[in-house]
Structure formats: structure tokens, C-alpha cells
Image 1 (tube, helix red, strand yellow):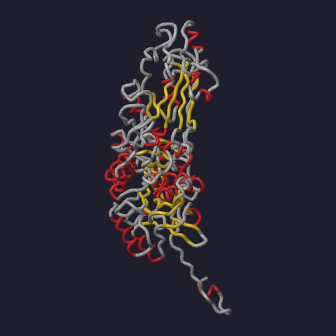
Image 2: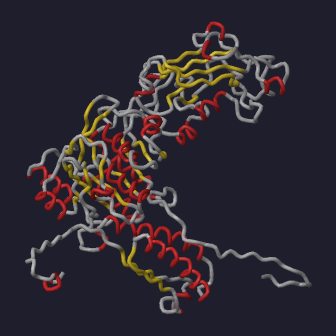
Image 3: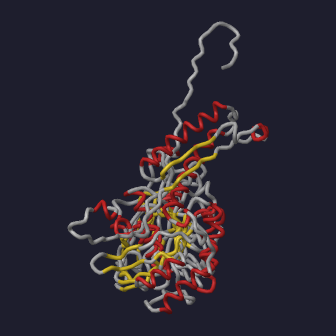
Length: 565
């Protein structure tokens, strides 16, 4: 406490209630090709319906990405999703040559002041889906003959705000409607997507509750489908403040503005797909910005998978990548013969050894309800999903494999369904077989990481156990920074960590532990270098991979004790 200069009472409150916090273990991360949505902007998706709403439906060029994400979401509800970039991406526009607006950041920095000459509106995101959009608006002068007037409750006129600020200023209101003209979003041509009623031409217009009512800002903040790009030609006072508007009335339209957007494209060239995918995954490298635990590779070549391992999970060291082998042509490896097994092992042999990645045995065949087709889809979304579901039902340090926790959903058949001999070949290589058993479902039948060295870390449950421990304890340890390295601080740290580890031990995650933080490892040299050292020893619990059952037959006259029972 501070030294008092005169008699008095000081009240000091100290907090010794700090704990080791819970950390996220079920958040997924994925970068893939989608038909709609922001480009290179991680977006949290919680369900398949949310995925469709934000990134569009699957088609023949992106179904692997869509269903990889969708399959993960059938087990969990937290997926940071990135739509990868493409050279041919363009946003549909009202007129002129289409442009690319990847995401909201790019719009704000490059186009929010009407810098592009593409007419009044542009599709919110790149893609051919934008060509389905029709945007129409009318004001007081054009409402009576407007095709879409029956979608609104009344005629636009003068806002309450304009009357209050400048009583003789009129006609600042207008209506805007967004139509799915071609039916690519809803399946119903001409369906109404959005309506913006009684918005204002005045840049400072407010509603009675204080929210912004300027039509440009309302569209940009609330629309899921379009950006504002410019005022209509000749409307010189649109966008001015009420006080600064000239004359007694805002400029009015001579006829309603109706624009069918066009020029949108969304092709991702197969030749640069890997580099685009790596660009998307690299966004997740910053662990301070993105809290993720499960990295889903989706459709990934050996080049992409190696990049995810070397440049993402091995750099962060707080998440695990999930990978599915594919053919050199980028398609599913199909069949259960020696050739298919050789292709699986060749894919694995091209990747590095790491405990921060898990590889399965390929693809599954599933139904695409959006297009009434069957598709081969990588299994890694499901395997990551099994880990997320295990977090909810048990704990991250439980194995996601086996009949109890390893049931894979939505499987018509497997591209490769290995037999016992083939499973032995795959497991030696660190490939976790996914197997369909008649009457018992499709099961993840292994729990190895891709670590080649024999170690506790060659199991998924051990690797994820240590990620939880390291992440949680490191977060708690931050609050020891700038404290004194003395017996009090060291004891405080031990009293913080040991209850947490006892709890994990009670939940079957570890067999035993010890925390050492005293003068033996915090020597004078360590203290003089402004460092603090704690050594945490862990005996992890191991999952059962092999079961031996011995059946011994004995004569009726023999005691079991005599034969070692």
C-alpha cells in the first residue's frame, strides 16, 4: 500500500480467485471454394443452413468444399470458414465492366465513396449468383407507376427527420427492393429477397430511435446481397445533409430505377487451386486473432497438405490438421484392391511426420440433396467433427475412434473400405482406416497422428490433451508477467495449476502429474534474466488399440488357482 501522510483508513481489495480458464477445443477452420460469400475473410458458420445462406449451395465445381464444411457442422456448430480467391472472380454490377470486390474491407477502402463506374449497385460478393439479382428503387415521383409498389405499405415522401431539421425540405424518402430474378438463390424466379422501405436520400438522416436511415448506409450495413456503388445520374443533391440540400425538395427520379445485375463470375482455375487454398489457410496462422483447434483440409493435394502442416499447425502448435488422401488427379481413390492401398500410402509418404496432423483413408460417397446427386467427399470434415463431438460428449483427451465415439454420418459407401490385412498396412503408415461394418455402421477405426517416431504423441487423444493443457495453462501464466520471481509468486502459480491438473486427472485425462516451480529451476541466473520457469510433468492416459482375450479350458477337477486364474 502507499505510505499515508496523515491518519486515515485505506481499503484495499486483493483478488486471489484466479483459475486456469477453459479453452476452446472444438472450433474448426476451413478454406475452400464456394459459390457466394466474402473472399479471404474468415466467417463463423454454425450450421448447414447458415452455410447455404452465407456461402451458397453446392455445384459441380465446389461440392467437395461445401460438403466437407457441411459434414463437420453435422457434428459441431463452430466453423471458421474462408472462401478462397480466384483470378476470374467478378461481382455482378448494374452497368459497365464487372469488378472484383472480395469482402467488406476491400469495399470500404476502394469503393465506398462511389469510385467505380458500374452504375448504382453491385452484388455483395463475386460469383455468377450475383447475375440473378435485380434491384429496383422508386421515390415519391415514381412510386405510383412502379412495378413493385405493392410490396410496400405506402408511398415514400418526406421523412420525420427532414421535417424536423428543415421544415420546407421534402421528398427525401425512397423504397429499394432486391429481387431474385433468375431464382438462383431461392429456386423461385422473381422472389423478393430484401426490402428497404422509407429510407432517405439525406446522408445525415436518422430514425426516431437514432439509427441511420441514409439509403446508402442502410443498404451497405443490412443487405446480404448488394453494395451501393453510386447515386443515379442527375441526382446531384442525393447524399447531402438535410441542412445543406439546395432548394425546397430533393431531386426526384423521372422514372423508377430498375437494374438487372450482370457480369458476375466465380471460376477457380484448377491449375492454381492449391496456391489459392494455401492463401486461405494462411489467414489462420495468427493464433492471437483466430482461436481454432481443428484444421480441416478438405480436398487437398500433397502440396496443400504439406503447407498446412509446415506453415500452419506446426507454427501454431495449438491445433490439429485433418487430411484425406486423394489421387494425383485430385479425385477420390476408389477401390479396395492393392492399387488403391498403394495410392493411399504414396500420398502419406509424400507428407512430413508430425503429431499435429491426422490422416484418414480417403473419401466417402454421400447424397447431395441440393442437386439430387451422389458425390465422393473427403472424410476429413467428418473426422474433425468426431473430435469436436467427443469434446461435447466426453473430453478432448478421449479417443474419437471406435464404435462408441467414432461413428461417421451420411455414408452411402466408402471409396476404400479396407479389410483386416489392408488396415494393418495403412495403420503402420499412420493412416487411420475408416471402415464400414455390416449392421454396425461406418467407423473411424484408428486414432494415430502422423508422427512417425514411436511416442505418446503418436495418438490423437494425447496430442489433443497436451494442446488443452498447454493452451489453458499458458493463458493463466500470462497473469504472472511483471510479478516478482519470488517464493510467493511461484507458490501462487503452483496453487493455480495443480487444481486444474487434478480436475483433468479426475476426468481420466492423465494418470499422474507434478508441478515444479521453486529455487531448483528458478536459479539466481534465471531470476536475474527476468525469467520465470515452471516444469510440468504429465503421465497421459493411453487409449486401447489392441485387445487380447485369453480363453483357457480346464478339467473340472482342476482349481483355477492352480492354473494361474
